[in-house]
Length: 277
Image (cartoon, rainbow, N blue to C red):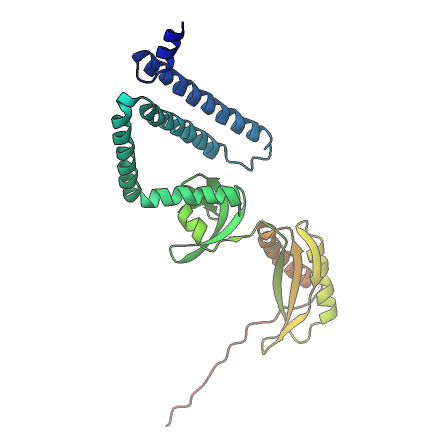
């Protein structure tokens, strides 16, 4: 019985080689199941969806494959007859990793940047952001985030696909977090009653559903064309503020017309030069 156990546990015998192969195979399988169940437990405690499900599935798959690769390498080092094969396999894995790393620098950069974005969460799906794309400022809503790319939908319906390496290093403004002030200017002629105009504009703004608080409506400019009143109001976020600006312009104009308050007319300078007779 002792001889049988020694043959079963000795890496120098065929029985021992099979025994250790089963040990490493079962260990890698159990570790993979543990990783998958741990991730499922984490996702169950994330009903808000803060953790990307696609990224989590990719991470679990990559971890399970890595566990089996490590198990194979450890097994070849455990069995003396396969030790040379294990050294060669480890060297080949290192060489292949270097080749793949050089050939896919941009792809790997996007993947690592995507992992950084998922870790720090500077923005998430549904946020309104402003980024620089093709040397122009673009504003849109994040439609999808993956490990490699982020898709942004602009107000005019365009889909901008941005590599995560750009999203991670570019200065992006998250317009969805925190209150944003809507600023709307009204030019009035000098004969207008400023107090009455200020009251009309303020009441028109307060009646809009997207306005959180009307701050003030001071005189901000005196020019040849007229007097400039500037309404300032807090809104929940930038998306609401954009809608409020348009609504205040329209409703404020109608309210001023109803109150008999005229807007400033654009001035045009006409220069007449007399030609010598």
